Length: 314
Image (cartoon, rainbow, N blue to C red):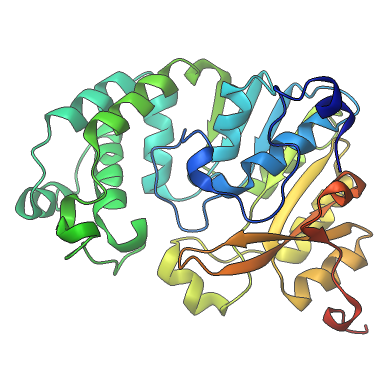
C-alpha cells in the first residue's frame, strides 16, 4: 500500500512502506548511546505516524528517553520545534544535561583525547567524585565498553568484542565526537528533566499540540531481568495507561507483546498493532504498538492486530 504523500513525492518518503524488520543501518544514527531496547529500528514508523497526524505538533515529550533516538530524530528532521526528554538514570541524565548545558563540544574533545585501554577505562570509571560533564564522559565510556552497552551495576567490560578488537570494538571516537557536535546544534531545543516521566506527561496533558512517544520499561522477564539492563526498571503500568487516557495530544507507545499489557490497552480503550523487529540476537520478533488511532498502520503489510488466540478473556 502507498500513502497519499508517497504517491505525490515518492523520493521524499522512501520509508513509507515498511515490508518487515527495519535494517537499522539505513537509519541516521543520532544517539551517542548503544542502548538496550533502543528504538532506532522504530524510526521509520515514527516518521509515518507524524506524517499522518492531523496537524504538525510543536513539541514531543519522551518520558522514558534513554538513548533518545526518537526525540533526536524529531528535532534533526524538524518534525517538532522542541523535545522534552525525561530520564531517571543518573548516568544517562548526566549525558543529556551536559548537552543541554552547552558542554557537548567539551565532551567531544574529551572523547577524542582519551587513550582507551582496559587499564585506562578501569581507572577513569573508578573516579566517583566528579562533576556532571565528567560523569557524562564516564557514562559514554561505560556504555561503549560494557557488554551490550549495559550501564546497570554488574555489567562487565568487553573481553573479545567484534573481530577480536576487545574493549575497543565499540569505541569510535571520531564518530562519537561528531554526534556530540551535531547535538550541540539542537541543544537549545531540548528540555531535559531527570524526574518521573509520568509526572511530566501530566504536565503536558492538556496541550493539543504536544505528542508523546512512550517506550517504558517492559514487563517481560520480570523485575530481575529488567534490573540486569536498567537501574530504574520498576513502573506503575496501570498509572501510565490512565495518564495516557487523559492526554489531549496524540501518543504512540511501544511495549513487549505481553498479555497483561494488552489487557491494560483494552481496559483503557486503546488500539493495538503488532510490528516485526529484529532483537539484539538478530531474531525476528513482534513488539506491541499502542495508541488512540492506529488505522494508519494498516497500510503496512507486516503489521497486524493481535490475533484472537493471543487475547485472554477478562
